[in-house]
Length: 270
Figure 1 (cartoon, rainbow, N blue to C red):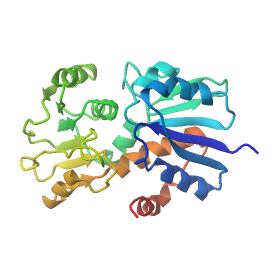
Figure 2 (spheres, rainbow, N blue to C red):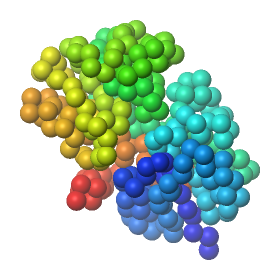
Figure 3 (cartoon, one colour):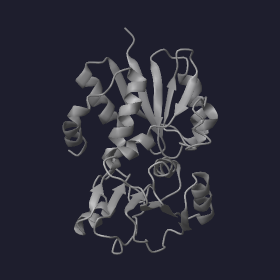
Figure 4 (cartoon, rainbow, N blue to C red):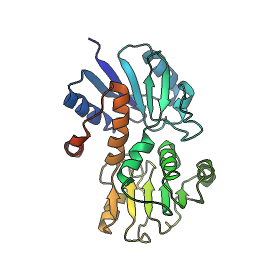
């Protein structure tokens, strides 16, 4: 019997918790499969896909930093992700053997925010990479009136706002935060091995939500600062689990047991 195999690729990749998530679901459902990390440099992307695309057990891979935009050149883009989100985080092989790219990050990001009405709200997003693209795509469909995008490259940030049809401002990273309803860190800042995110939450209203996509560490300095102000805080595990659930169904043909999310979170935070 063929044991199905999927993995997550990136550079670096040792920090990824995706294997814990997928293995938990595989075990829970009794599926004979595996999910691991694989460090792949930018120069090795083409070779990676050439090695795996014809292996019957290889079902595909998730993509993390820094490849979410570059991998578009190596797969079929049947959902026109290039012109919409502009980045992919999941690649799967269809029944004809073609490699197809898609993005599950936007759905994973939206999940924890889906219970609120964001019509007319103002968001600030830090970063302009692949993760930020998924966030901006989601915000453009959630009714936000304005989005402030902070990034080292202000011109890139402004172009992204225009790409997603969002009204707002592009500012440098060290600019003061406006009084937004939602703050999202979609940059690697604050991740293990990366510089800290230096931002002052003092100007945010008391009902603001702070959402950090970083999940290593889970309790980032940004989230600690938000909790110290008694602001609603959403950690990176929410998006990680949400996007992984969609990818798991694609890879292994079964819906993960989301009723066991509390148990999964306990495992991920141990």
